[in-house]
Image (cartoon, rainbow, N blue to C red; front, side):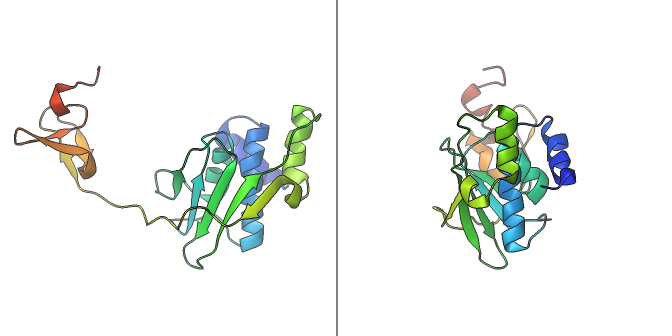
Length: 174
């Protein structure tokens, strides 16, 4: 593992931990196997089955982010990531199989980053098809609170376009 790559991910995440190492290793293995770098738009897609530290490694190194719409969640609590490359049609699912066992936290982190790939992840076919590209929606101003809201989250109430928070009289404070 190149020190610069690890430090980039740590800077993004805020601290070094085995969870981050899982995502960093998944990202670097994908880059090595597919000969890809960081996705600038939606060329690379990740569906994460967890919302843990490893996701930050994937965001930092692969450029899969929620904001671009190429990082999606299917929360199962598993350390598993499905990757897709739109241009080539390639896809794989990486599932963590490495166990900490009697290793210390630091030893486990190092093992995740440097151990044999086949001992860290099982690689298989994804369980989900390639997601569609992120949709782009018009926004409307809620006619109750005045805040801009994406079209799918606008509701029609008594002839007014209202956000979900204001729909049926609900307010931001509950």
